[in-house]
Image (cartoon, rainbow, N blue to C red):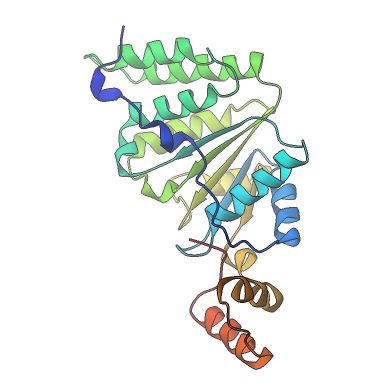
Amino acid sequence: TSLPPSFTLLLPKLLPPRLPSALVVRPHLMQQLDAALDSKLTLLVAPAGFGKTTVVVQWMNEHRTQGRLGPVAWVSLDNGDNDLFRFWRSIITAFQTFQKDLGQTALAFLAQALHPPFASPSMETALTFLLNDIAQHVQKGLLVLDDYHAIKEPTVHETLTFFLDHLPPTISVLVMARAEPLHLPLLRWRARGDISELHATALRFSPEETAAFVRQTFPAQLSDAALKQIDTLAKAGGGASASV
């Protein structure tokens, strides 16, 4: 069964965004991400403006340069991804960066589920085929879901829970959001040790990082007192970051 034209994906959503030109090297934060991403699920939660996406892309680029990064499936989410089929088609298509035909059987079941009558087992069957494909063909990989706070649809949360509960150990998932995704079973995953978490406090600039960022951004030389005042104001306003 073929997918309708309205089901066409915006492929740039499956690519990491470009990094800004002014970046601060943050080795301590890179090390924290290294440790976190040893877990099945890493949750990176901070308000807008804390540089969640920038930090993760910076980490990816550093590891790719050093030859330490396996394949990455990236999905930038938005309100339109509250459609269950669009959400999973995006993820399956992103996984095809690991292997060209990965998830084809799962996509076929998704296409069938688009036609009434829709039965919920079809979705579980599709995800089972996807999980089996990943287990058989992917030796190492990372799935990144950016802006997960855009997801409000309960069935998306439910199916992602099923997917994460049965995820092969060769895959890690990184979820970035502006608030904790309360519809996911975070307490259960915490109790099992399946989840690592980084919050706004980890993303805040140190005084030295604030100074480095300001010196890169503004051509005028600022005094140490002015830099200290900027750092204080940034922290009072919620935090400082390399980018949005």
